[in-house]
Image 1 (cartoon, helix red, strand yellow):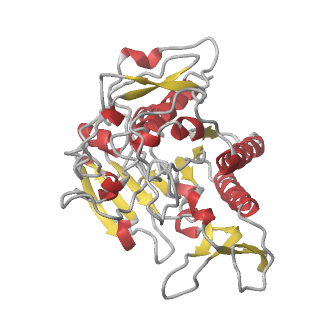
Image 2 (image 1 turned 45 degrees about the vertical axis):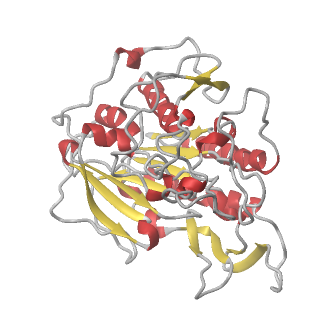
Length: 409
């Protein structure tokens, strides 16, 4: 996700951005997506989303602001660690109507697909040290759509992986870019190699070439690195992950993911430091899946309630993936200190996501999977999240970080 600077000659309105940004996250965090939220600007590569010259977007202070409740000004003596906490039952229910929201991707629309158990909607994340305000304006694209009618102005790619919405009332465009590794790569396909080919030292220009224009970026990375891949660094083969039959050294995927993330963060800092425009960068940590059994062998996620505190620990691969994200973001913060206008933060959602095995589409990734009775084998989705659902909490936390920044903390 990104936000561009205003058009040349106009004054940047940080207050508008901090009030409006929290509603533009999209609900595909568990897969590696790159989300942008920005004004139109020229694109240089052929497979990027084209902009319409008819759309002129600004973020001037004359735009009517979205209002906040009094909870917005709550301050704490010490910054809150939103990572530590527990899921508590909450009668308030979801933040928006999932059956009428037109921006939910089909595979995550669990209610309209007939999921009968709706208890997963009535849980709220309660941090140990403070409150996480449940402002009605804190949500993903669906909640933004309750304040401004979105106009889908562009779709492209398999499964519409590139999409753009225009919210006319605030002259804002929200876009989704598909970049599963953040660096340049060739995805495996039936027509090509049966493994991914990644250049871990070269940023993916489908989003990298747009960085100079952006004011905010939200990165997500993780699950796609589990696939078989060959890695290149400096034009030479670095090694591979699960590549039997190829004459390459098996190195796993952890180092490759770390290098790819480092490349992405360094590209953001280097390209923004001379642009004269600041940027806010968020990186979501790894979001665990909850398959009980092998995903391709009738593995499912049948639980209907969150884990209790202490019942499930972040460990193994989940812990390792989270550590990489945290460490690389901390290193990027140090690198960015020498430049003004750059703010970076990790959205550490690994633990709170691990505790929600009930929040996935499961068999309801498809409409009414049991309409003709219980089938012998029904594919389950235990990676993505239902909307509304636990993933809305990620956006609530991001809003609190933005509010903290605005208070100068």
